[in-house]
Length: 366
Image (tube, rainbow, N blue to C red):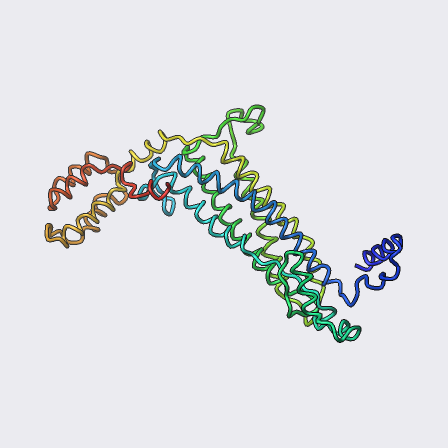
C-alpha cells in the first residue's frame, strides 16, 4: 500500500500537483483502500462473469426440461427402482434450485469501510474536527456503487464476503449434484453422448466416449467449494482490531471463482453434447412393473375409506406380491382383477403402466 501511495504522490508531482500530495492516503489505513478494492473486483467478477456463466447452465437446463418434459423414466430412490418421473421434471428440479440460489447471490451486498486505523475517524477529527467525516466517507463509498459499513475495526468485517462465498459454494453443491446425476444417467444409457470430431475417449479403448465434461466439473467444484469454505471460515474472524490472516486468505478468491468457472464451462459444454435415449427409458420402465405397487395399495386404501373395500393392510398385501420379485404386466393385471375394489378404481389401475404412472411430472417440468 505504501508503494502505491508513493506512486500516486510521484504522479501528482509530475502533474504539478505537489500542493495536494500530502492528501494521498490522508488519515487512511490500508484496509480503507483494500476493502473498497476487493468489494469492487468481487462485485464485478460475480455480476459480469460468474453469474452470466451460471445463467448459461440454467438456461440449458430449462431448455432440456421442457424438451424432455414428457419423457417418462424410472426413478431410483436409494438407487432402487421407484415411482416413475420424467427426465424433464428431474432436470427442472436443478434449474429451480439454481434459480433460487442465484437470486440470493444476485442480491448480495458488497461493503467497504473508510474510517481510518481502528474505524473511529480519530486522525480525521484531529486534522479537521468540524468536518462530518462519516457522511463524507459514506458518500465516497456509495459513489463507487458499494455499500458503506460504518461500524468496523481496522478492517471491514468481511461478513458480506462470508455470506457470498457460502452462497456460491451452495450453488456449486447443486451443480456438483447435477454433474453426478448426469454422469449416472449416461452410465445407465439414459443419455447418449454426441461424438465430437477429433476427440479421443480412452487411450486404449477406441469405442469409448467418456463423460469427461461432468467429471471435470465435479472435480473443479470440489476444489472451488473447499476454497470457498476456507475463505468463509477464515474471513469471519479477526483477532481484536486486526490481524493479517484475511489478507493471505483473500489472495485465493480468484482461484476459487476460477475453478467454479471451469466447472460451469464444462457443464455447459457437456449438457450441449448429450442426447436423450427415450427407447432406453421405456425399456427400463417395462421391466419394472412392480413400481405400480405403490399405486395399487394407495387406491385400495382410498377404496376402503370410501366403503367399497374391506381389504386390511393393503401395504402388506402388495409387499408380499412384489418385494424382491420381478412382476410383469400380466401378473399385476391378474392381481388387480381379483381385488375387492370398485369397478372404476379397478379399470383405472388396469389402464396404468409404468410409463404413464408419472403424476403431474410433465406439467411440473413445463
